[in-house]
Image (tube, rainbow, N blue to C red):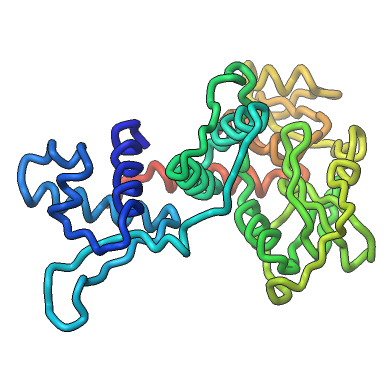
Length: 323
């Protein structure tokens, strides 16, 4: 969102909060300085309609009504304070700096909306968020796993879920989980929760979830332990390393990085090489192999091969030209 648009939306929020009366569009046009730059009435109408929808998308309750219950007059607008206002908020300098840092962390769209809604509400309430004190300390959280959104929503709603989970040895099993939290370590996202199959707290790496996440119970039925320490449940080191061997067919002169990690390289009939190396992580290996295009072919294991095929088909479909 550009700074000009942000300023315009904040001015509109302040304008609609500053009165208990229904404000007609013309009065709003005079009160919000940026609307004065509109070249025509039609341009103002389009901008104002877009801004109203943007505020509603941000969770700000813009209402439409009339000054009179007896006569038809020009509709007016205001923000429902009861639905909008937050209790008084006071931030320490440290809290303000951390909040500004958190607002810049998310790069993908899955949480960009909630972050934007929070920041607009805080700014409209006069809460100053320090976005500069921690410049240089700006982590970037990546949540590209397909299951992230579904698990985030289930965790937020307190709804149990089921999914297929691939263990480090390649075996796939059904998991039924009461989600407690999502946490990140070492560049990976994990679901922390109660495993109904094993009747114990467990952590599940999102990159190992196969297929769709299903809700298997109603919302607000999961009880999160009040003393939950999610970090203590995250796995460390060797347990997460996939020790299976991958066998690849690699074109001569290609796949140098794969060859460097290889435990065995053998010539094959036809001039290609058979390369054997540890899987390490199936998802990352599949992404690396797919980047080599036709120069590298996965022979085993099948889940890595299937992941490469899925990635290549997705790239083909994304770049195909309609007939």
